[in-house]
Image (cartoon, rainbow, N blue to C red; front, top):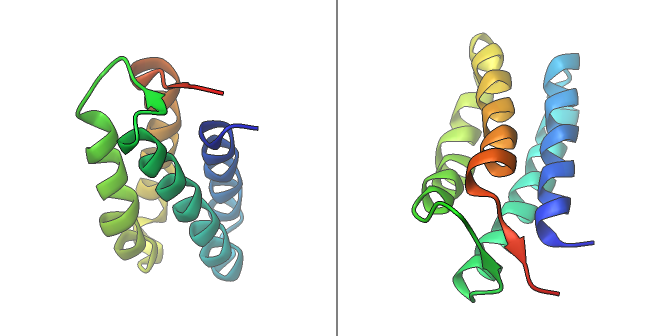
Length: 102
């Protein structure tokens, strides 16, 4: 299974934890998602993953590693986090369109 697939699966799992409002599951889910995003970012930098839209991977990586953890600390922002995470998933699938060498 490729790192992009794992990243998308972990994003879905984090989305479920947010929908349930379970802070412990959200924290664990965030760490798994971040690890998957970091693995995908490393493979992108190595040229193993190519994308249709350059520039977006860096912005998305920074959102996950810098902005998302701060947003998740505030329960009032969880609805926004859900929306942004859903947008992240759709953007990966329909705009970035990553292709991973095997």
